[in-house]
Length: 173
Image (cartoon, rainbow, N blue to C red):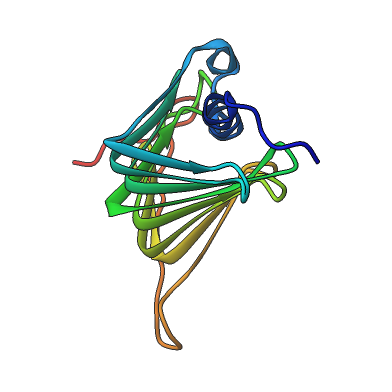
């Protein structure tokens, strides 16, 4: 395998943002922005670390964290780990669906499985529906949310607001 080119950092940011942009179809055509106070790219290992108010955005997708570590193997983005107090992720899956907002101390994204895992006390909100647990996993391919509490006695909470006949959720009184 040839060593990565000097453009590796830009390609890495592009791969990350493109992979995370499971959102509005037009988002994939938007410019990708990655900002941080510091960054380090190890071209031999394919690992890059961004620190200090990390912001990755493309269209409606936005990830914020204190740090983000990106793993590339054989020229392709494999996974990303972000940590923050808290790390946040938001995106709009479709024009007719509310924005999804997630917060947790740790966010992991695996390209191969197309799963986002939020851990350490996670909260995922879509509209007025809320899902919380020690670990919340969102399967992007199948649009499935799974959660679990901490330890044997840990609990999850899921609040689903009632829907009107043909409209959005009913408002809380």
